[in-house]
Image (cartoon, rainbow, N blue to C red; front, side):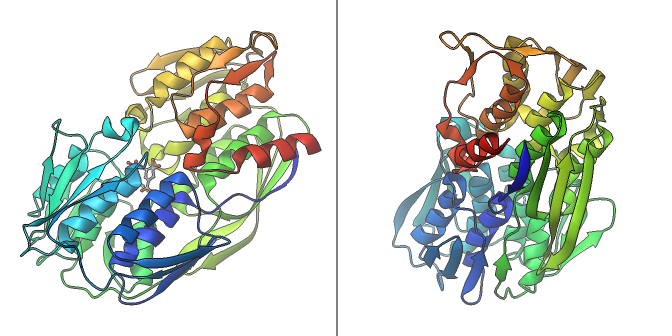
Length: 433
Ligand code: S3P
């Protein structure tokens, strides 16, 4: 597999570029914005709340809603499959909805997968700031209804080092009457803190601890962003390049944000050649061109402190481990069980079907390689159950490259959540190989 890949804009930053317009003091823009099912859920949310936008060739211009113009009653916002849309909106809306209008509410709903994911991790700390958020059916799950409230600050210790939860609290903190302190965010991605800085909102940090503070009553400005390529989407091509002899893949303009660069470190440890060119800064983010080339794979260990910086890349790194000579151990990743699917069991079940030597742990996997993976016949392929999870589907596109015989995905359309053009780009690269 050889060549240059043009990977779409970062999903996390694109969500924030849409949602934070609710805070902005004037028009904002983002070029290289990712247009995918997930990020469109965020854009649709701000549209329903009164923002105006134009989107052409991935350039997003936003005219924020000046203030809440909702009439009395309840507005439903469908977050689709997107945990980021839903969890960030919880924090944002808790403060953005007027505290003196209990007759206005917003109900957040989602698809089957999102409706089964835990929401108490974000709802509990927001309630400690005074937020009014109520579960409509099952405790701890969507749908949830939000009513505006006067928010105070909070001092909160996160139960999981989640960027989504940290971001929800920081968004609520913009409306709070006292300082907010968040502890235990670990090395989770810091796109919210960076975009806040671009908007003139100062987040205090405690270097190396992942602890943050936000002083009350800061006034948000605007942003004009360039969104770098998404390292989580790039990882599928990069792991493929690391595994297939003779490969060399370059991804241009990839985010090098430390909170996202964990997979590159693992690829290096696993023996791949990783070269970074044109390292440069954009307002708020760092990026560069990344070339990965094949070399003999070594096993690797990933443990808890490193997890937040590569959480979304773990499925494809599990595929890499099947081709490394020796035992790979991935632990500390129990949160993978509550992503778009239970990714620990999804990877175990499907890799096992292909003959991998993989043991499912409560919080990760033990994988022994190298294994020659084997599929079925053209008529009777091994069917991979994606569980409607985009990252499982793309991880098995990579696994198929090292599988003798045929395997087929039960659903290939689910990649549209984060990477609508994935198959087109993938097929083009394979043709060139
Ligand atoms: C995200 C944070 C991560 C990640 C998700 C996107 C974000 O989730 O898995 O895909 O944009 O903040 P957690 O923060 O819950 O770990």
